[in-house]
Length: 135
Image 1 (cartoon, rainbow, N blue to C red):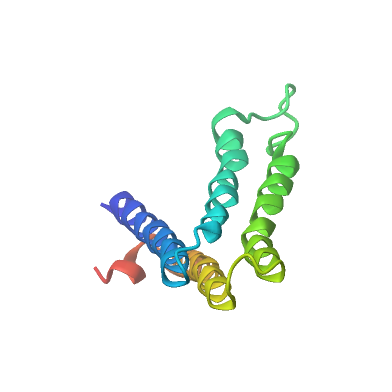
Image 2 (cartoon, rainbow, N blue to C red; image 1 turned 90 degrees about the horizontal axis):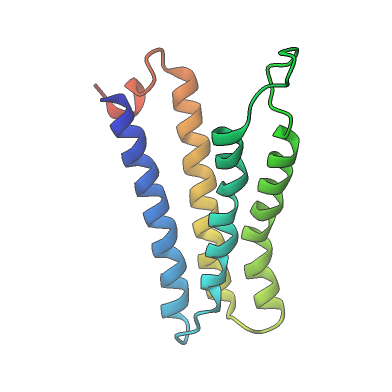
């Protein structure tokens, strides 16, 4: 039952993030440039997923960390920087309005805050999801 709550919370966070990005496009003059933020948002997950699926320890078993861990972290951080940079650059070039930038960055802050809170509650609970679900 614990796994279903993790999937539910993750799906809710992603849904609210995508909704806020679409809302930033629709509310401000039907300009769909803020939707570009979804590209680095989804590409950010690729290095981490590849590391989890394909990463293995060293050939000799001397290390517990995969070889490409640092490259996966670097690539994910590179794409995460785009989550903040793309709305700011689009606003600086007058491609989108300031309100669309604020709404787009609000979606990014929502995801960051939700994930930080999720990790905080997981680290504090003994059995994983007890503090989040209330059971």
